[in-house]
Amino acid sequence: MIAVLQRVSEARVVIAGETVGAIGQGLLVLVCAEPDDTDAVGEKLLTKILKLRIFGDDQGKMNRSVQDVAGGLLIVSQFTLAADTRSGNRPGFTNAAAPALAKALYDRFVATARLQHPVVQTGHFGADMRVHLVNDGPVTIPLRLV
Image (cartoon, rainbow, N blue to C red; front, side, top):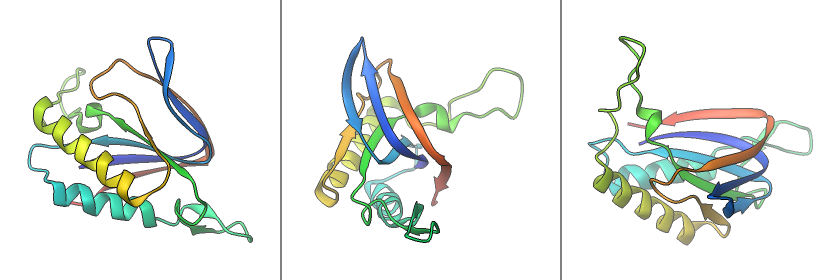
């Protein structure tokens, strides 16, 4: 799985003019499943996300995790993270998992996140979404653990 984390002071997902998920301080997590991914890969990625120390401590150093600061997670499916841009000018997306597998992995990732973290919001898998965020820092971290 691929994820891009954005440390935010606030973020929300809007679909057809309606806000479907919103958080204050926390992480916007854009996540993409790849064909060989499993639930175990998702769990490993989630563990890393929850423990990654990218929030400031009292001295302003990035020493706190999203759990330490009681921040929210806004998890959004984003198949375009698997874009292959090595040739031509139109990205290819064959590195992304097929929609049925991707949805199953995304749903389990979100369900596991909700078991391990108190504030989890989402977009809707496969929907045309508008993601609004205030990037804090800015801090943007790409993650790929496999």
